[in-house]
Image (cartoon, rainbow, N blue to C red):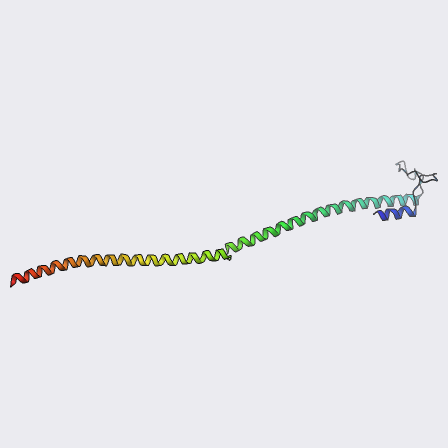
Length: 157
């Protein structure tokens, strides 16, 4: 922007009308065309310089807004990357793909297997206890029956 403005000034320096030393700066008035005494070429150059300055200001404003939006975009991209990493970790946990989740699943399977064996052994123990009780009861009954048969045999002799 500065180079363009300097190039315009070098081509045609703007001086106040009737001034030979060039120290005075021109002032625009709104009292009709050419009221400040400038010819059309000078006026065109001044208008061009004003247009360049306005365009440069607009460019700077837009550039600043774009830079702010770029910073915001980068911040949001970083936040998105963090959220995606967290989401991936949670998906692995829910899909039971992590080392700890696999270990937990193996332990659960082992617990289920051991629990099934315990239930089976408890069932066998109760069966054997019931059989032992029946055998004791039957032994008492058979002993009583044999005694009665033995006393009947002795009485018959």
